[in-house]
Length: 170
Picture (spheres, rainbow, N blue to C red):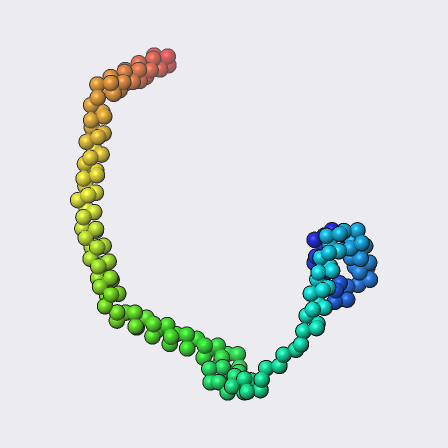
């Protein structure tokens, strides 16, 4: 048995809920592993401490107040309780939304967002045209460089020569 297997079975072993084979395997491992033996001693001490603790009963007045509270719906069945919860949830959400909508800061914030988006949309058209024009100018300047035009003309000559040579070979 490995230490991880013992950790899984330890609670059942301390409660006496393991079978005979598992019990002998746990005891054999505890006899050979000091770390697991210490863990078992600590766990059995904790169990013994909890068994000595007194059981606390709730005062009768507290129980009566809980049962009499209208917000706690112990008398309702499953579907009725769920419908009640959903309706209360939507009521609270709608109240919060209604309160937020009528706040002047929120209304002003929404108006500013709409105005900003409209302004950006209006500016994007000319800006997009300027970007395209700048790109076209850059490409034209690149193609008009003497080195680039020399390379392009040389490539065209080689292409024509290759096509002529291919036609003569056939």
